[in-house]
Amino acid sequence: MSNKIRKGDNVIVLSGRDKGRRGAVLQVFPGALVLVEGINRVKKHTRANPQTNSPGGIIDKEMPLPLCKVALWNPSAKKGDRVGFKTLADGKKVRFFKSNGEMIDA
Image 1 (cartoon, rainbow, N blue to C red):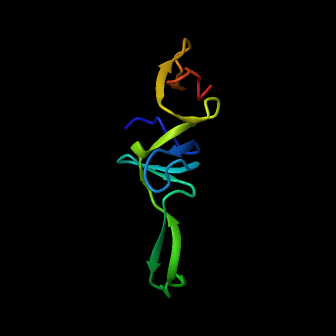
Image 2 (image 1 turned 180 degrees about the vertical axis):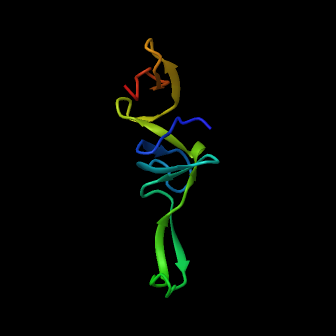
């Protein structure tokens, strides 16, 4: 699995119900899923559990999105962008935006 999108990155949703919305990546799961803050919110019905003292009811929570449905936000181009990797002269591997070649991890 490539790590083109990492925890803390700002991403934009490319398709689906939340198309065009932006948020920060909270977690990247194996199997190409990503959890984005405030995106893909669902209502989950939960039963009360007296052992953990958690009440029942309907809770709002974020669900993971497929990694192919998000793109890294490019602040200079003001749009979602593809990401590539290149190795610098000192041997450090960095990410860069494909549209303008700007470094992400400088």
